Image (cartoon, rainbow, N blue to C red; front, side):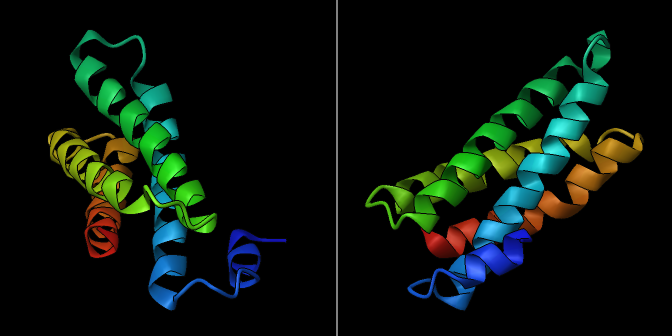
Length: 116
């Protein structure tokens, strides 16, 4: 079952929440890829750190939304901040993995801000 199919089974979620869960999951995946590619390069240390932060917080936020946690809105704000900081860093690099992050993260940040 795909993520979209799984999320659609949670009938108490709004369409906006479903979209945010999917964007957070995509952000976590692309940031894991980017961080892995940046490891070992001294010039890319900050990028790797920020990507790891986003991967962790975005996946946690998706899980909090799915279980209707009372702390989801606070986490949404932190996730949006992390996504924006990471997107700013990734935009500075030409690598495909960085550009993929720079593309998805602003969308995730906006969705998370709407959840906050």
